Length: 327
Image (cartoon, rainbow, N blue to C red; front, side):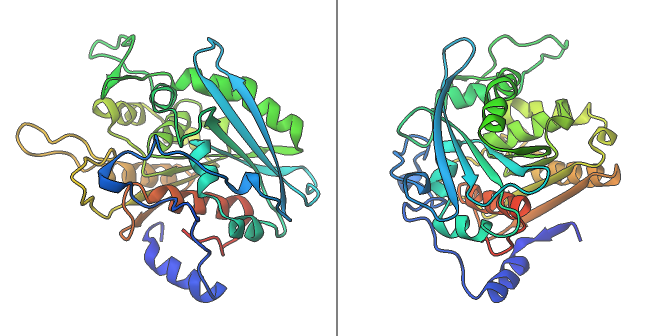
């Protein structure tokens, strides 16, 4: 059925392909040492810096409209000719980290009948993320109890609320660039994001549902700023997602480093908190009831940080049909 644990699926894939794909040499998906955030970790050479028999890579630099944020856009175009109608395109948030997560085995697996164009939307820094810019770009606008827009919503000292500005940047700068560099089937464009990226992915779905044909959200930080995304979901008519594909993936292994999971809400004063996974699963249920191709998967063997690999692998599977790509 649709609410499934991925464990059985992974076992089946292992037996069907004979072996797991090699893990990234730089340890992508592994927890950060001493519980530290991985956002400021340096990113060394990635698949984009090596010759590939299956893809050619380009790097472009773009700026936000106000000049405050600076982006590195890495476009991977299959060497195989585009199919009739164009390639599927997978737009990947956290582009620096996504490229560090991709492996040569992934590229090989996607070199089959319908390899997708990959568009990594990262920041022009030497680390996995520009954490300040990411906090602004990936988080939705916030409204107070009277419905008034909060000018500069903050979480952990970082200003957020710029998701609509960021989507406008993607629509006006990133997508035209990608479509110029490769023949893309605009009806088969996909959006993938993990954590805050998953938050942004679902925000786009609930506010501009037909921006993409497929949405893949890995461990979305649904309870950011007292559940701003959940409020958007409550106001959303699931029928607007009819015909879209939505995959939501949740890592359920508890953290052991003492840090709070960004996918969990703060504990209420009475000691009780809503279960965010139940709310996210409800999203999938109601979207599916409204004729969206929506799925919700749990990964009990993976924690929050490891879900970047697991969710990206699922996005690559959907984009290319290559079931041998492993979380």
